[in-house]
Length: 610
Ligand SMILES: Cc1cc2nc3c(=O)[nH]c(=O)nc-3n(C[C@H](O)[C@H](O)[C@H](O)COP(=O)(O)OP(=O)(O)OC[C@H]3O[C@@H](n4cnc5c(N)ncnc54)[C@H](O)[C@@H]3O)c2cc1C
Figure 1 (cartoon, helix red, strand yellow):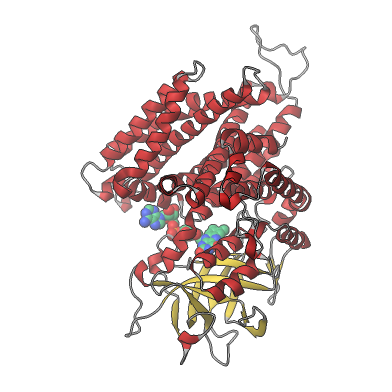
Figure 2 (cartoon, rainbow, N blue to C red):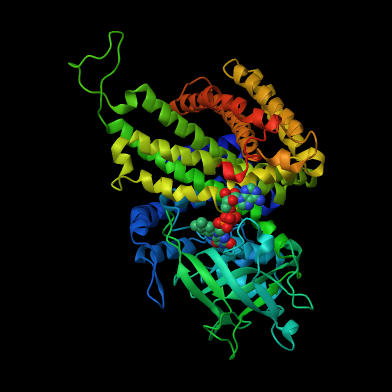
């Protein structure tokens, strides 16, 4: 089973991506160039990623005291990906990029996530370099970002510390000016950093000649104290190997040391590291302290990082989605082949009859259709959000602003909904396999383990929910929520004209009203502790309403393009829509009462009662 037909339908028929080349930025493109990118990604993923997905799981990275060793397959895959030009796909032509729409870039990367999410497709490197293109100086772009886009160097994001994960305001990594004339360094004001960064993905390896760490740290005030809160956080480029202004390695190792590798549940193809900055293991010019170059203004480090958040979170949502789809496809193949049990007829089972394949059992069909509804729905949501990113960058001022605000509201869903429900899909994929699914002889248990990360990183589930109910639906006087409601109501109006979809349209309109009412009820007395105590059930209901809208819109498009032929793909999309409205959307009635009532059951339970 191939991903491509689904992707083609969503990109070209549903989202109309073919029209993007009418915009100046994408004028050199056409459906042919988009297809060529997708073909290349599909091929590299098939040849260099998929065959090694189990290998990178069983041969996890290890540290021999000097070097981190990764399988040769990871080196080969990394090289093939960098050679494809995908690291700089969205960049300007004049720096070697393709000026590709983000929607197409994200679609191309989907193939890699599905084939082997943990070998990785340079998401961190691209994110790191994109940030520098936005906030770095001309020389920082030239030296660091461009060498990352070419694949010569790779990038990390060093935010978390052992004691500061969700609460980044508590980071304690320090950055102090590096001697006289520190401000005049051509690579940026030069500091010395000391501190520990935990959980850093791709923090140490030998896939590339250098690693460009982007590090959040605090510059102490005149009394040597760190400023409390996020205001004190600045951002620094800390290369593993020091470089000159031409981007050549100077031969000096920076004072960044691997303290150890974390041994993960899944996603094992990527190293995960505890890094010590400035402990003196690799003194620079006779002195402990990692050399770092300030990016942007002091105290504005988190703002620089936030610039990257939407795309990073869509990337996480996409990874979760593709792992879900990988499990769906594997379990669908299995269910078509596995004989077990007999059909139940009006007179019960007839043991004289041959066995049927498990795909013929209603309950197995239920598990397959649930996976399809979760994962293809999530893919549509991610691509819709990616298309909003393109609108934000290339639309008219009004359309760009609407896209910006819609993304604010949708991003917590784009990150969290697939992380929860495509993980559930992976669990169902195991279930379809029965006992075989619980062994390492089949791929589905690995998909679940790999996917389990996504509810944790890039803002945990709880933090995303707080962001949605505590900030996003309220911001700019609720205008983002109103914009979203406008789009949902537009789909509802169109679906009401279609007899096959009218009942779903009414159900969606009712769900939207209920979510709006719950939002108001949660904030009725303006007490954040009460409003946010049930933020996760709120996010679940909000997310299911968004997905119901996405499916209804996809169904409208499927029917319009099918023109009454009842092709199998259309029948499947309409069935997934129906599944979502019959089996999933009603769940919001279970989630929202505790939100509306600001139910204190969990919040008020004293510790000793647990
Ligand atoms: C495999 C992996 C890769 C990672 N890669 C990177 C990376 O490259 N760079 C990087 O900087 N970080 C990375 N991280 C770190 C990741 O972002 C953090 O694990 C995450 O932010 C959570 O922080 P924590 O682990 O300290 O958990 P905590 O913040 O201690 O959270 C523990 C639990 O408490 C909840 N909680 C915490 N605060 C609140 C609150 N205020 N209200 C309600 N609930 C709350 C959380 O939701 C969570 O369920 C990675 C993590 C992993 C596991």
